[in-house]
Image 1 (cartoon, rainbow, N blue to C red):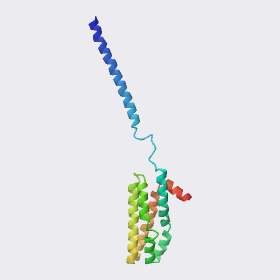
Image 2 (tube, rainbow, N blue to C red):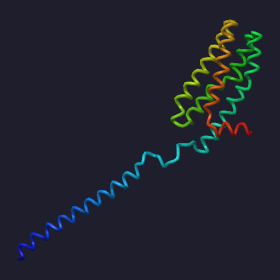
Image 3 (cartoon, rainbow, N blue to C red):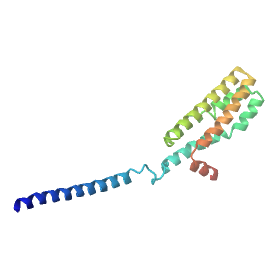
Image 4 (tube, rainbow, N blue to C red):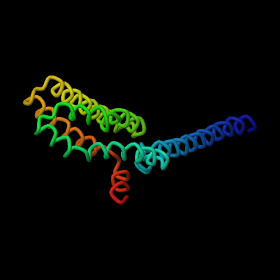
Amino acid sequence: MLSALSSVVPAALARQLQRLAGLCLAVVLCFGLAACDGGKGSLPPSLSSEAVAAIERQAEGFLAARDRLPELAQLVNERNWVFTRNLIHGPMHEVGRQMLYINKLLLPADRPEALQLADQLKTALAQLDEAARLQDGDKLRKAYIGVASGFGRYAQILPAQVQLDLKQA
């Protein structure tokens, strides 16, 4: 009788332990899946307030250079080679550095497009400078169009909060 009882108890105990192990595994999987929900419940990445402030400081200079486009257009229309180059090498000279600094502060997902737009604008400025140096009116007009559109496209990559803050200022 004892031998029959001893063989039944371990089997029942084994079944109970299997059920307990299965329950523990189910609980661990539930918590694991909830913790790894793919970020659906999390907030999208955003810039820190320090990054926004630094971008605003650099964007002020960038936008000040953009605001000189009408003056540059007048110089291009007048084919004023010397003052066109002076404006490029003077007030607009810092644009490349400002865009570089802004690009470093943007969210990683926004950087490739910002880098591409910055390169396009710098190339257009270099082409405008070269056209003025060569005193080539046709190339000067085409390059100016590239510069103006480059400023506009790059300004759109600025974070919405920065654009809003600068409009209110």
